Length: 492
Ligand SMILES: [Zn+2]
Image (cartoon, rainbow, N blue to C red):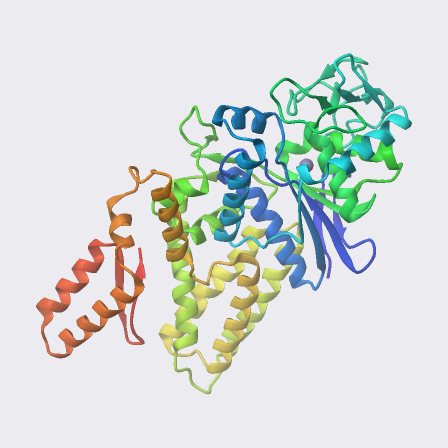
């Protein structure tokens, strides 16, 4: 069945179906690689990931193209401050970005396209705009898009530009949200800046033209879905539409998907407020990648998420509860008799889970259906009514849930370990809490061998020794759980 999704362009919730009936063609604006990604960026990439995975559950294949902006105003400024050529400067942030996506369980796009590797396509597009009278060259050699040549300008962001000032120009990549001005397609070379020699003259592309050129190169003039953060709606996406549709006279993207901003502790995230966090900042505070993913997707994409540390702690516990529950369902010795009521509850939860995702990707209701089932199944397991068929049905549903939410598989220790290795290489260990450093010195093998020693101590009734081992592990952030199904340990 199709997923229904809000379309910013039409202002309505619409069915999302591939125009060619085969593959859904999706373009998502990628990162500008001038720094490490922050949790606001990742909330957008995570919701695009959830959408892709939800489509996969419906059996819809996706051709997903994402750009890497590896030349723009900020990159040029930062690279020159660091005394590096722009490509050397951007490459390490690009690598870090993909490491972070992997840590968060985000699937890689089908195509990753770097702006600097598509300069000829951008030049060709600008030349087509010139031929159609939509682009002109200014005195300094830069090329601009003539907004007045595209009367539909503002149709995505629903802004009224009827009183706009024809000929007013802006040459920065990002600019104020309420004025329509002719924007730079190609920026003439400035002294000391990296430039390309092209038919348009020496210079570099503006930010907006890259997405139009690369989207159309890989997906065609007209494609199904364009995604990005809500901050990109104007001017970036509005400009993409103007450039692309002026060049082709076809609808650029039929459906537009925008992910809302997050707040941090109730306020807009900003460096000056001290509430600005990269993924790496959070990992180095001891928070788990799985809990960060889970929290960032817990609120539907169209609603604002208020990210708080209290919420992150609660999410950590919620992920742990889910993992313990999955383990319990797998490990239990269930009887032949089936709990019919629980089986019906499981079927209802499976339906509600899928229906919630189809309802404009409502992640909050989808997970609520699963959490509610976990509560009921735990109660049934405590009461001893769970049968083998119940456990099987529940595990099948958990696998479907996890194919979208991606929190049950535990890679947290390895991800945190990699973040610590990175922090050490970058000289950023000062702020790492002592407990995390202690955990780092304890490999899984070392913990397993201490667990075995504790077991032997208990068997020989040497409780002083077994308690000492438990306390030592606890001090290093390792929690031991004894239950009738056996003993296991986990990192706090
Ligand atoms: Zn873009």
